[in-house]
Image (cartoon, rainbow, N blue to C red):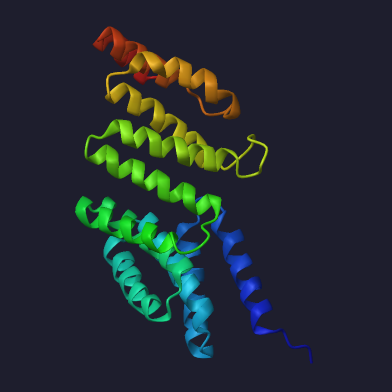
Length: 236
């Protein structure tokens, strides 16, 4: 009989979950899979793997707009992780908590959760993708407060992190496109719409499929203060 080590089993399970989570329009299947794995981990007393799958499950529940379930799971997991001092997973789970609070329009608690995530992240090495997620969330919260200049800086940091994830500056993480669009919108909102075409020209080449023409047109409409041009640009 062939036995698989616990570490190898955990790697296989997490790889399967990652593969399934990349399947489009299969959110309920992804949630169900994570719930089954959590149940198995509980029966086998596999705490390390369970905690990581529960963090993923909380994020999936948020995506499914099941905010109460997602927040309850994240809060319970955070209390457990604090006792274990698992800073890496604490950063990830506090980030999920910040997203949940932002989704239910509780900006002060979202800021508090994000601040805690960053504080824990200062004590460890944070991988570029996770750092990009933290910066993007910071940009979102700055936008909520109307601080578009600071938000732009955060989105720029997130964009560079996502765009250069493969080291070449091309074909990076698809979230780079969203950050670039947010950068352009921040310039419009802070009254610097004339800078948007330059941003598209400078960084748009890295995101060939980002479809930035519509945002450039919106920026031009904002500069001209033309509602007619804005309506036309909004359909692009």
